[in-house]
Image (tube, rainbow, N blue to C red; front, side):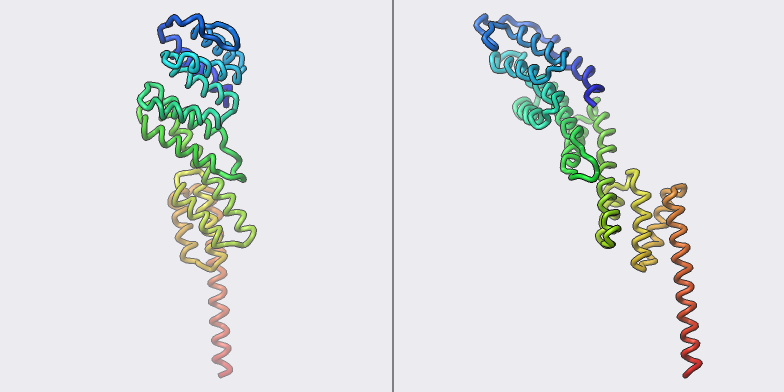
Length: 276
């Protein structure tokens, strides 16, 4: 994902810096035993960033804040350092730096970007659905925070797209756990998982299968009314889905079994009456 984000994000941050008027600095400022001005430090840091030496870039951007804490460059350098850490896949360090920026500069014009970059740090750590989804949950919270705080920003538009993908991922996790329970014949536990998909992630791509699984499980448990209800919901919302066709076939077969069972029961009663 980095190779897609690198150019626009870097350009955005470089523009922020070049839009700031240059200030003269004391010749006593040093960085790694060399006397450098704040502009020289920034130039070296940006060169490291452009050459993908992200660790060195972060160190130099931090040096701007350390040597020139009251410069207008210092505030921007915090974001540049956090971005360098993000590009170096040092997500925890980047998040910590962004949290400090947000806490110290809540009214800064670039705070929306700080929230966005923090959300990306979580988003890019989303793991396979077979693994723990704590990072996915954090990504979702952070993305929703952007939409709530900055609804008119370009970050909110991108966050909304990522929210849909994140929710679909969480639903996928519930589906995987539900299928696991089916294999272990833990049917009630499986039902709870699939109902959670319907109730919490009903607008995701996993809803049709979740409804079918409910039809399947209710049928196994002999709960024909609940099975029919789930099949009806599936047919109403996803009439062309393959899952609905499977559910319809399942309900039809179950209906035949019930009719046959009732017929056999009636014959047994007749035979019992015959021998009375």
